[in-house]
Structure formats: structure tokens, C-alpha cells
Length: 442
Picture 1 (cartoon, helix red, strand yellow):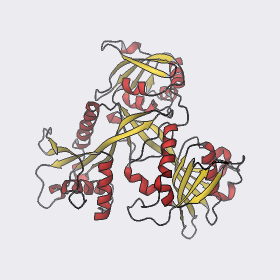
Picture 2: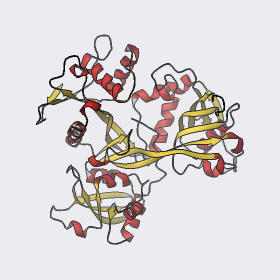
Picture 3: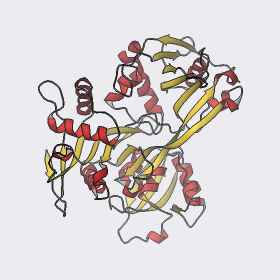
């Protein structure tokens, strides 16, 4: 365990370590205390031994690095004697550009600060340390999904993908306006978990801008082995889609039926919906809407331009329950990340980036030819005012995948361009091959 004592108040120690197990496969004392502190931060009960052993094996498989901020002189009897007052982890996770290529991100998770120790710089200390390590380790970009939407912009993160929780009423949905194709068959969740499901996800990931590879611990949940509470799940069902005349699986769905209380709807709740073609997506939705003895189908990870709306017999059967931020990105190396992605149009622009933490600050020239970009960092004394585009690093992160338009950010006053044609050109350059869609939480 590395101890980094850079606290001028001498109140806290920052410690960096890797999760470890004891000789029984359980988390060692330091790891277990960190896990218990995370559970406290998210209002969850501590894990029993079986669940804790499973979780720590997942952390190790995902190559996680933990941070804990510890009170140096804890009060007698307080949890400070073993638990950190702040927790943080990061690990490598690939972000897909949708053309088969990807960029490795420094994925951030499990960020908590205990209520008794807030507003004392703990989060800033953990974040600046972690991002500094990300730069040193060669990450071009950091990523996260947030439990709150107002925390991370001050550290240079911008919301790159939004998502919707939706429901569709069965009694008004079918038949679709155009016939679906292929065949949907029910399968056991175990058959799906034995390799078919992960292979389908890998194809979805490769073709979907904004998709991120999944944590090891995600698979048992989406395949119905465990619920979100870590307990054995018994109510999850599965189905797959195959194209006409083919044995290949090009999409799958797992779901559960939740009985409504008196006066409430009975719901088909989608656990996981993964598709490699639009035909698979539509057919799986048609199947779900055909399940009897329920009222609505609920999906919490719908993309913003969901084609189901256009397919429904009555578009008013589709309702948005909630929309919020999903994937946040933080650029650490402007040249590396802009050169890693494909482009839809040629063009040349100078981009001035401001970054309060200093990692991405500078003026850069982006030249795109034949779908690939070359980035040149201009001299430090380059004329920022004369650049084509000026923006904060958080807004550069928001633009990267192409689901947020430079034209929109210009209208919001977050992207500055003297020539109104420049945001239009940048929008054309960044247009993704398909709609960005993230279905991975971490």
C-alpha cells in the first residue's frame, strides 16, 4: 500500500492500493474496510462473506486500483479506526468509436466521501491524484457514470451520452407499422451465460459509438444469476433473435415480470437488451410486447432516438419516464484521443482548450483527411483568440462521441467560434457512424 501524505492540515492520509484476498478468498482487512465504506456511501448493507468474496474477485479481475483517505488520529470507537473517510477506484475500460476501433479509458468508480468529512477537499485530493496517475500511465481519457449530475464538471468531465428510462403500453403498441424479420426463441439464462451473450455484446460494442466494455461483475447480473442486491435471482428469463435462415444469434434480451400491487401495472422489466442489428432490436421488442398477463414493458437504458417510437402502431404508447446523463468523459491527452477516433468529413480547425487542472490546456490544430485525424500542438504563445474554436476541456469531452452537437454548445455559450460555419463543420466531422448508445454502468 502506497501512502501519500500531502495533506497540509495533517488530518488525512491518502493511500493507494490494489484489492487483496486472504487465504480463504475473502477480502483482506484493508480491502474489506474499503468495501464497507463504499457500501455506507451508497446506503447499502455490508456484503456477507460469499458476496464479498465474489466482489473482490471481480475487482482483481478488472485490475482496479483503490484509493482511500484515512483519518490520521481517529476518535476511539469510531469507524475511522478502520474505514476510510473517502473511497475511489479506477481501472482500464475500452470506449468504442463504433467502427471497430476503441480507446482505452481510465474508468472511475466507487467515489464516496463520508458525511462527517465533506467540504474538506477529500474528493479533490482523490480526483487530482487519480487523474495525475492516469496521465502518467498513458491514458488519453478518463470516464465515469455518475450518481449525481453536478459533481464532476469542475474536474473537467463532460456528459457525452444521455439516456432515457421509458415504458411502452402493450394494449396500444402492436402490430408494428412494418413487419419484423428473423426468429425469436426463448433460451435458458445459463445457455446465454455460457458464452453466447458475451459474444453478442462484443459485436454490439464494436459497432456502437459510446459503448464501454463491461465490468466482470456485470455479467452475473444481466444473465440473471444475481440481482442488484447480490442475492440469488430466480425470476429472470431470456430470449435470443436469429436472422431468417441462420443459426447465428444477433441479439438477446433478459427480463423479469414484476407483479403490480392493487391499482398498479404489472411490468415486464428489461434487465439487458443487446443487439447487433436494428432487425434484432425491433423483433426483440415485438416479442416483449407480446408477453401476456402484463401491462407495460419498462426499459431504463433507451437511446434518445429510439426507433421503437416510429415502429409502434400508436406512438403515444411510448412514454419517457426519465432522462439523465450517462457516460462522462474527461480528456487527458488531446492529441491522442482526437487521433484515436474516426471522422465523417474532412476539414482543418484550430482548437483552444482550457483546463483548470492543466492536463489538456493548449491550442491544437486538427487536420482530418480520409476519416483520420492528425493533431499538432501549437506553440504555447499561439494566439488563442485567433483559434477557430475555444472551449473548456469538459465540453471537449462532451463532444467527443458525437451525440452532443458543437452547434448546440455554441448556442449555449460553451463553445466560442467567431465564424458560425465552424461549429457546423465540426459537427459534420464528428458525426458518428451510428447513434451513440451506452448500456454499461460502472
